[in-house]
Image (cartoon, rainbow over all chains, first blue to last red; front, side, top):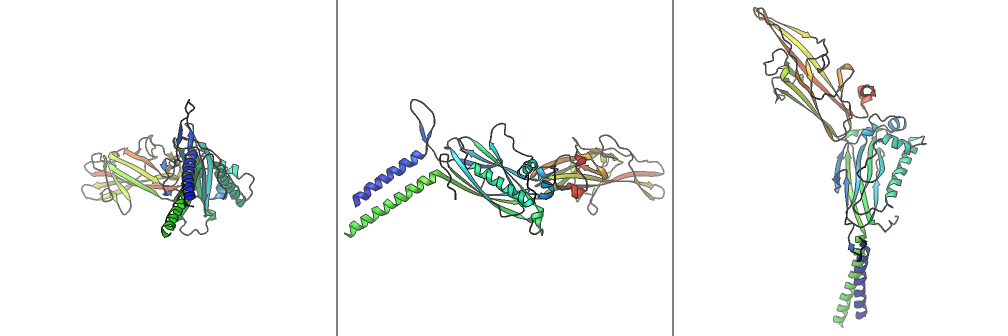
Length: 217
Length: 221
């Protein structure tokens, strides 16, 4: 029994070490001798140009009337600028292996209008979307009611976050998503002291090896 | 026997630890999770005005500031006085945490005082500026600041042409000197002209100016 356990223990140790190493062998260059490196996931998350810290306080949310300024309006006239926008950048280090990212983001506030835009890979010609009104109009095309429009927006956001899950990000790449927010005055449950309202949101980033798949929960 | 059992138990615990450890270690290397809490709120706007004569800023305790009526008192007729119109400079700094539209209004009151030397009697008269000069504020003796970009609208309001983005600052040089209004002085009387100036600065959320200011977007076209 003792011998058997010692042998198994030894085998386990060998298997554990080799499986970890195998998981992180990344092909680097084709030469007469193949160089292999073993690295762990190394990603830095940015909000605009600042590293995303555990807790962040942001100001600048503006109230709008979703129906009047989005559904019934053809011109932005301040609506686009009123959107509080941030670029969420997923910066994969040069030493990292291929990764996939899953982002979870839930809001419990009915008045908080959220728009996720998939901006793609960052390069020198990067230009983020700024015409949110046209973007929203495309999303809500065919929606006759505010509820239907907001449902389309919710599905759009879900689609953007779901599509990110399948994208393999290479070492050294930066993937960008844009998060835009407004407050819909008409959806406020109470307008008492509404200018003092604060909103807490949790952003969860889950990164895995690029060759793996996320298990749907 | 007991010793053998103890050894067996230790080996078994080590075995379990290695098993759990290897699974956890491998899993940990395959995953990275980060949770970030973001707190949002509306934000505020801060307006600061710097008033200076000959480059020397004044504060609310200055004799050239009427705290009760929130007026800047400027000598419009004597270029040598400390608070001479030609020495005046006003800069407004707006720091806003939300996207904003900005407009200003100058409320000017030119008051001529004629003091009769023989009796000491003083006559006061409010003067009107009827000329509109290039480089000056509309119907004013006050010169516009450098690189002045404000759009002249109705009701004496001047509009900043662009939307000020959230969490940004704008510095507007509103006034940079002015033209002296020469009063008459003779053996009978001495005239002095005082300009009482009030500046109104309004900051509104970028998409709310139509309702609050009662204008449409044509002023910015």
